[in-house]
Image (cartoon, rainbow, N blue to C red; front, side, top):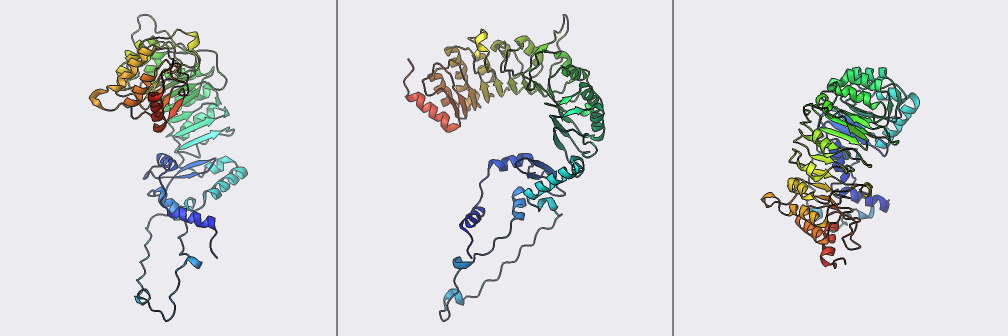
Length: 480
C-alpha cells in the first residue's frame, strides 16, 4: 500500500539537504563539535551531559536514530521486463552489490542517545514525582551547571561534586550551613547566581569565606543585606572575581547603596565585568588627601544603566575607569549627568559599544547641546553600537559627530552596525550620509526624531530596511 502523502512529503524533506539553521548555531555554541558534550532539549528543559568518549557531531547523532530508507514499493517501483522481450538492460549482468559499510567501532554512546527525547522527559518527570529531585540529581555526578527554581530542600553538593555554576532562582530559606556544605562539597564551584532569591547575608558571607578564593562570578539582587556581602568583597575574600552584578528586583529599594569605589578596586583587582543595574547608588567620598585607587586594569564592561535619574557624574566615572584601558562596553543609559567632556578623558581607546540613551529623564534636566563629536572622533574606528537616544545635541553638533564615521583611518569601512538616534534632532541629510558611509549598518532607530519627514520616524532592522530608509530620504521633500 502506498504511503500517505504526508509521509511521502516528510521523506522527501528528510532526503533534501537541510540548510544550517539558527538552532544549529545555538547548538554549536552550547556543545561545540569535539567538546565532549551531548544535549537533550525539550520545550521546558535543557540538559547538557558529558559523553563517555569521543564526541560525535550532532548530524551524526541524528542520523543514528533514523531507520534506513527502504526502496520504494508499489506502483512507483520499476516494472519487471516482460517475458520474450530481451533488452540490453535485461541481458546485461546485474552489478555486484555494494559492500555494506562497516560501522565505526567505538564506545557505546549510552541509552540516553538511543531513546527519543519525549520518552526521556517522561522518565525524568516520573522519577522526580515519585522520589523527589535528590535521587534524580544523584544520577548526574558529572553535572557542571545547574539552576534550581523555588528550591525548598537541601542543596546538591553531595550529588554534583563537579558543579562549577549554580543559580538559585526564587529560592527561600537557604541556610548558612547549606551554602557552606555546598562550598566544601563542590571544590570546582566558581560561579554563584543568587538573583531573585531570598538568602540571608550571613549565609552568603559564610559561603564566600569558604569558597571566595576560587570565585569568578557573582550575581546579587540588591536588598538591605547587600551591604554586608559587599563588605566581604571589599575585604579581599574574592581576589579572583571577574564578574560582579548587582541589580534591583521587582520591588525597587529606595535606600541608596553607598559604594566605596577605591576599596572595591583593591578587593577585586581582577574584575572584568561590573554591572550596577537600575540602582540608586552613591560613591563613597574618597576623603581629603587620599590617593586615587588602583582602578580596574582588566575591566572590559561597565554597566550603570538606570531607568531613573542617578548620581553618576564625570568625577565618579573617572574614579571608576581611570585605570581601565581595555574597556569594550560602556552602558550609561539614564546617567544624565555624564557629558562628552567627561567621556573624552577616559583612557580606553578601543570602545566597541557606547550607550548614552536617556529615557524619561530629559524633561527635568538641562542636557548638553554640544560635544557629541568628542565621542565619535575618539572611537569611530572601533564603535559597533552607539546609543544617543534622548540626548539634546543640536542639529549641527550631530552632523559633525556622525561625519566622523565617513572618514575612518586607512579608508576602511566603519564598524558601526547599530545606531540609536531616537528623540534627537538629527536631520535627513545627516541620516542619509551615515547610512551611505556605513554599509554594515543593520539597526537604525529614528523614532520621535522631530526633524525627519513623517512616515520615516521608526526603527529599521536589517540591511534591506535601512537601505529602504535611505531611498526614501533621498526622494522625500525636506520637512517645512
